[in-house]
Length: 190
Image (tube, rainbow, N blue to C red; front, side):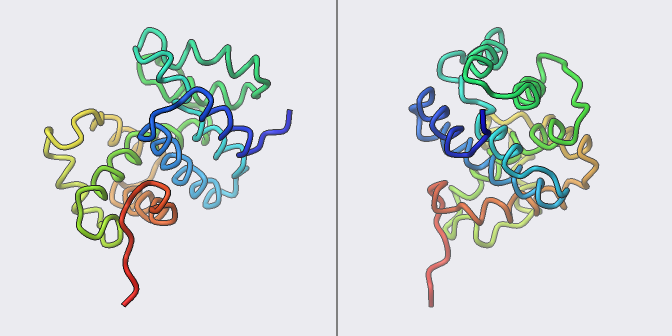
């Protein structure tokens, strides 16, 4: 089976009806693809992996099922082990080694992309002028985007070997490119 974004989007939308979950997939995809370009890796493979990382969350919304019960579905659909293993490794509760750059990148982009998206939603200009220091400040507010695991944000940057501020700035830049698809306001022309 050829790994394409169109096929991954079809898989995602077949299993995921929630607009917010679809947007999360798009955000993580944008950040992961940007890192693939930076690391000169297979952008399509990395993007497909990121887009699909939570495809089964509506079917399996609990830790005893997600994402491990989604893996057989992806296998049946012909996705390669590299994609499936990376998706499984993003789940901290499975304690799988993140022994490839793709696995470390997906983990590093997952929670942070969701958090940056949330930051952009509450700003008058969306993500346009968002800076790492604003994100760090919000990370210290437990009530803001309470579902985001802060420890995974910090651990992701550390495992990727990128300083937190640099990682945050990189993800912000990647999400700016898909702000419209994420429902974020963008700068209006003067």
